[in-house]
Image 1 (tube, helix red, strand yellow):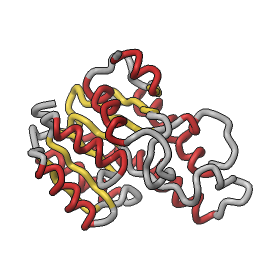
Image 2 (cartoon, rainbow, N blue to C red):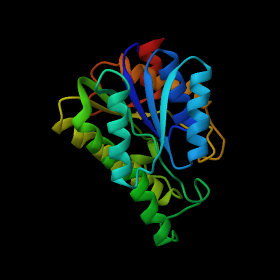
Image 3 (tube, rainbow, N blue to C red):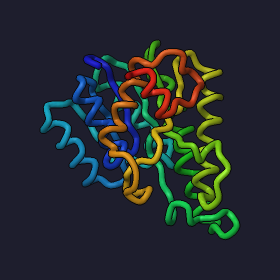
Length: 229
């Protein structure tokens, strides 16, 4: 990944932080964002301490102007363009599996869709003027986006929307757009149960640099294991 520039939204913790670390560790220049300025600074310091190159902005993907500023900053970091975008920022209001649509608050529904779905839309849209010819856009998703399961409310709805965005953008732009389903990952947002985010980051490296024939597809853990074993 030497010489590549990558953008990671929600890059201050969980999957986003580990993906930022993995990209930087392989030579990419990383631009990351998060809502908490102190967490952004800490993430950048962490990456620089390991010898990587990173820049961080306090930004909220619910605000397209924040997202525009992130992309403009990223495009100035390395080669004058953006080679990888990971639209990772997301929220879950409540306890996973215990937020049925039948009783979910309107405010929770609205914020989940605005962050998880519209936020991805804004991230991809604002990156378009800066994407290099061979750039890849990676959008985390999950089985909940295309399986029937009770109790996941607006989070499941948002992931279904995200997968539609992957298909739509893949049909409309020249660059590769792919959804990545890493399975259940142990993050604060999802209850700390599942796979280690550091191990999951390797899936993102593969999809962002090596995976073939994935444009418009949703790639899962099984496919990654088969391709890299």
